Length: 518
Ligand SMILES: [Ca+2]
Ligand SMILES: [Ca+2]
Ligand SMILES: [Ca+2]
Image 1 (cartoon, helix red, strand yellow):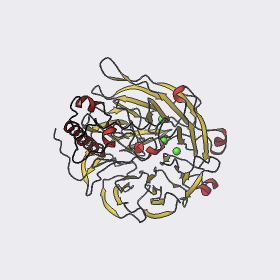
Image 2 (cartoon, rainbow, N blue to C red):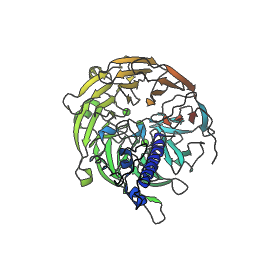
Image 3 (tube, rainbow, N blue to C red):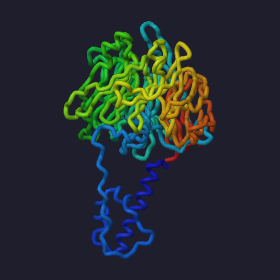
Image 4 (spheres, protein in one colour):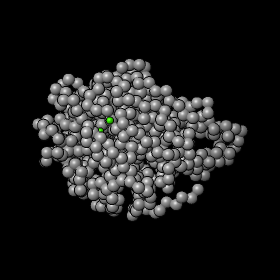
């Protein structure tokens, strides 16, 4: 049972007790109506006596609901699920702050319970005159997993060019695959407001919006990388979009940041509709950056939002925050934070519950700046002129640094490097608490659920480590060889781990075989 399901049961029990109390107290005039008027929080806030005393008091007075956060994303929600409308992992790293890793239980002695499909997912893709065959799922490749109408669904994009939507219990297709025009590297996003929509980029130059309520995938809209001007560098879409309050936020390899008003709704037949409008775009580069770094300033990470600021970085290493406070009122977003990391930042920025930002950078250009600021940097955005809180360094070889998106968990930050280091850092000081070595490149992002660190390596082994004591090198709980380099980030949901590999297939890993009854 998930936490939310447990909460629902507890709420139901408490609600029943409140009704019993009202009835026993003789307040029988309008128990149903009175109960119906109570918001769910009121029953939580009001303690129920074990032995109800007769009283002339009416039913307990509801406590007013807490004032909802007025801005875009309450910073205090870092580490929590993405809203409370749809249960699941709905976008890369689960939330607007890229910091929600899923829900347990985590399996204790897992095996592969199903794999999809029967043969490898492969296709060819070309860059310039060079054509390569790609198989399986890659970076970032995290599946979305969510609950809908009593069913658990899982969706992901793969190197066969397709978006897949499966029954998470069985691995059977819910609808036929949506085949895009090129390979898919990024992580799909699922609509957090419950609309039957999936959002996916592709190397085919389009960001696609797909519906799945007509018995098949229907492409309702797509955004062309060349819909904006000027662009720089390329035209793929790797980032996992964020959808909040009917707005979609996405960076592209066209090096621009984009904001789309979705205008979601339903038609007369009850089928989902969108009427998107590109309301804002802007270059993610500036002349100061291109003077140093040239035109490779694509945005390949997944944007983050905390408070009223939209955060992302680009392949030129420019970390930036854009003020979106007045977006809904038509106020043009404005860049309010600029900081240069020195090298390509493909990992997504992670924002903790205090608003600190964790930047993971690659080391390819051998610049002095990279030697000065490091490859994992904690930034304080309230000090734009001197934001570095601490730095972790990984520049021992000519190509080094970090592709995985780090995990903030309790008092540590866990990261991994291209060379195969897996490191636990003190979140306050940046001090290295422990370090492991795994077969690299370790591009699969860290996932921590219920004190268990899940880490894939490039030999095809998925590891689980006991992180209950964050001060010691976490002992291994289990490992399972699933074959093929694990570049994709796993999704942990309700006893099952979902992940694809470069070996060609996508897997569900759990303690016991899942039966397909019902
Ligand atoms: Ca392309
Ligand atoms: Ca890319
Ligand atoms: Ca890049």
